[in-house]
Length: 71
Image (cartoon, rainbow, N blue to C red; front, side, top):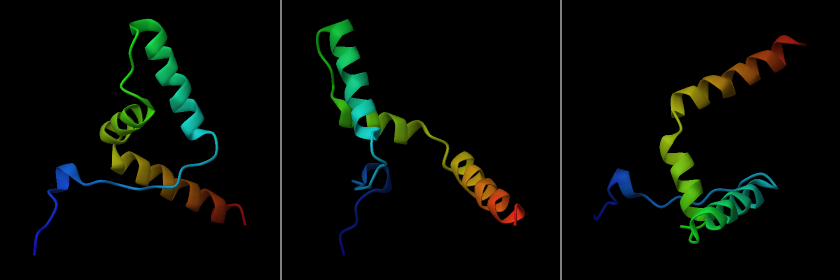
């Protein structure tokens, strides 16, 4: 069975409304400053690559605990 190396797996995700628009705006800003842009998809991939998944999971768990602690 052929496997895809972990460091190069394609990912398809659903993002909240407005997220793609913000990355499009950032891409346009790069284009205004440099004359070219790698595109919003590339900028999103950089964000995913540089996020700390453990920090995100801690924030996620904190939100769940805070929600149920309010009851």
